[in-house]
Image (cartoon, rainbow, N blue to C red):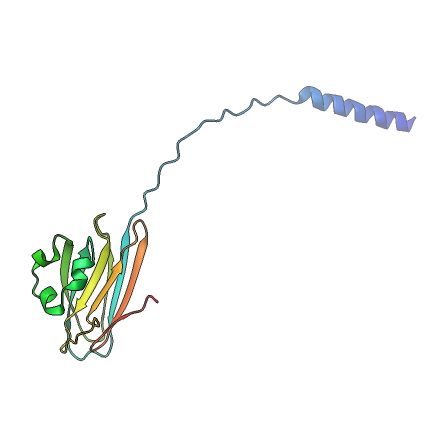
Length: 159
């Protein structure tokens, strides 16, 4: 008899639960357009002086192309005749790097910039490219440029 009461109680509980449960209306699905994320092109520039005893003049270039820049020698570039770069020059900045100091800049270049270059005014300019650094800029990303300037050399620390 106890068993019948237990079964009867369980059956009633089951039926009552079914009676009191409410139907939940389905949630409508709304297609909301996902906003397009536009990534910026950035240059994270860090230039550190190493073993320099005197201040050093640097010139920083934003370029459309590097072809003409690579063909010009040190003296042609230092004269500052932008016409020699055949329209490849977007901007040019001059900086003085003091001994045992650093230059740190965050640069947001225009969309036209495809190359970034640095030239250093060393006392003795040889026929090699130790006074010049150039790198391609990858669009829509952060381009990290870490350079060390010694007494006669630009060292790329990105490798």
